[in-house]
Length: 599
Image (cartoon, rainbow, N blue to C red):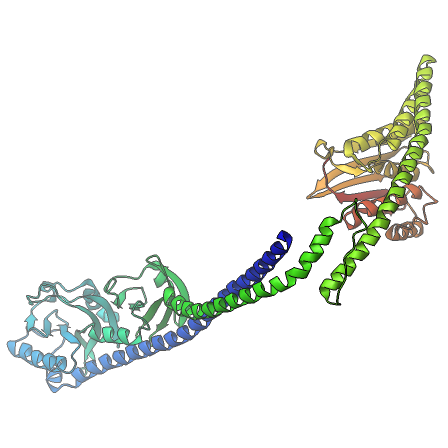
């Protein structure tokens, strides 16, 4: 049967969808958790590598400081210092040869040292590189970089200690090398230990980047990762990618340099990187490693792929089992569907033969029971329909009397005009409109415009009764006129205000009727400046309104307000509210609040 086949296919489809949804959720959660674990472990490892890198930089700094100390302790350099001062004359070739011996001896102690340059107090320059050594009468003839010149010009205010200068191309001096290597420089103020530590000059030791290259290769966690060694201002000492060596870091990276070990996510060259950085304690240099986000996702994806493949196999097995099971289940359902297909409103005597006690048998019994109830319900519905029509006829007959009264009031108004009695005509016409509005239609809701018109008719009658004692103000904006209120909801509020405002006093009184919107709520308020309600009576009325009992409606116009409160609860449930406030000798305010609905 087609219906049985549809049921079978639906069961297979449901199992497939549920298993697929579970598979997708498991894959997503696994991938997310794997990514988080791999990233956390990798960041821990990378942080340790970066911290090891800054430790190594600190060691290099100490070694450079020791190198300066070894030059100080060199006998030839001490001999040279004893003859130096601020006012000595020109250096001799013997001085140059002496310095050459000292410098070349120092250069041979480390393979990454490239040159040593010394400028004495009078501007004389001694130098030695791996290619040559020499001497200049004036350092101004050598084209020293600006960073070197800045150290020479500020030597008077320079305290002891090393100053690390940023990476740049080595000054060529007398070398014929077409492309000098990149070096970074350690500068130190030299003082004469034999003459009360009088300043003698400035010495620069340049170091090539081979040691920094080995350092970055050691701490780089991945071939795609980028490691920077940079100064505090973002000047790049070394870049493992070779793109920014001797340049500056982008602002987005330079701004993330800080004292403690830091971790962050940055966007660089269109790719997302996880950044780890730390500061070398004494060097004021930083080590920063950028690891591509893809390095984490690739590992997490391999874990997720394994889980997805396993889940796919489980899905295929589940679909196979579901297909076999659904075929066995659908056969008895097919028989039940055949009987139900032959049943209808014209043939309610059809029943299913029940065999066994399983769920399908229970379904057959339920079908037979349903057919029994359906036969009975159709009979009862037929009888109820006849009774409903009879009730409608009686209701139509009951409406004839109010319509008759409305027509009589219209006739009375016409006769009053003929006899020059306009007040009677006004009251008759207003009362007729009020009566017609009260019996009009079966809808329990009316527009604000209709409610306001109903209140105006009511006020016109009360105005004739109270004359100049009654002052009413209606302040309802046009934009709320098409929203819906319970029919005859404003008039009981106005009636309550008139009772509390004018029943017990002779002086004039004021009534205000206001309407407005607050978000999706429609608000109406009727206020009077009458005598108010005593506190004890006010408490009783509020208690009656709270439980909708209406028990206190026998005094002070309570019937209309209690009725209105009950209708609000029935029509709007918790979305409708009526509030009553009164101060003895000051006045009373009634406020209703309903959900704003337009017709």
